Image (tube, rainbow, N blue to C red; front, side, top):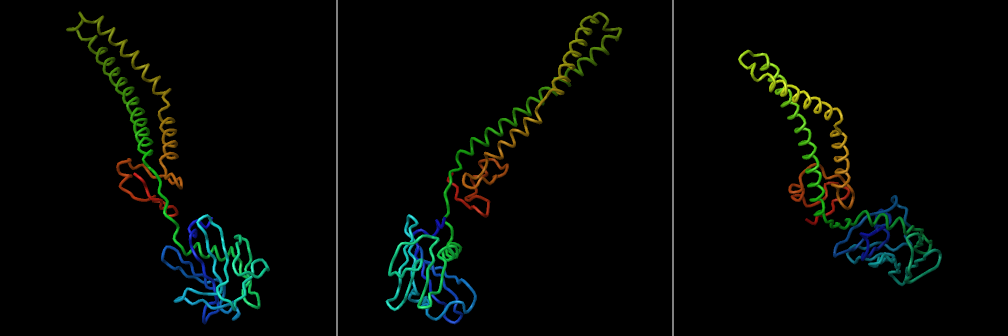
Length: 254
């Protein structure tokens, strides 16, 4: 939690004019500012925030490991953590900070929540190269299913032609000498036709296609958020730099 605040410094103080609580986050050379509460909610005992000097009542330093340190910024300020006055002290996200002689209460969680919304989330990098194999397997499976169905249909069509052709030829006077051959061809075609009809009725290609597609949709997804990346072939997918999910936007390693 608060991953995007690691290494940041958060200054809080009273907003001049509107007397709201200002939260100013400095990170990577940039400063992001926002306000908490309604106008007039912060008393004058809380030192005002000065954007030019980047100063206020107190400062919250977020270490790289997520550790929080609250420091009083001015000698004439009063800053309390969970009821104890401090100059600088470690704190937890659930701590309560009190500012000034009237001990204006501030939830550290509220400050961190406001700050994390201001700072852009770090862009994750995810390796999508394994997805090439996922797409190739899916494509090969669909091709195998299609070819099997085509073979059955081709054999059925052949048997139909063989059966009808030999049946007609058998009754032609000029071909009576080949009657036995045509009869054999007729029954051969009939057997093939019956086998094809059975195979078509017993065929599970539709179920297999659905199963293969469902598995593909689970695997052909962003490694970070699990968002399905569509039916685009891998060579087209790698033309995209980021996950299309607006809530993720992870950068693709390809």
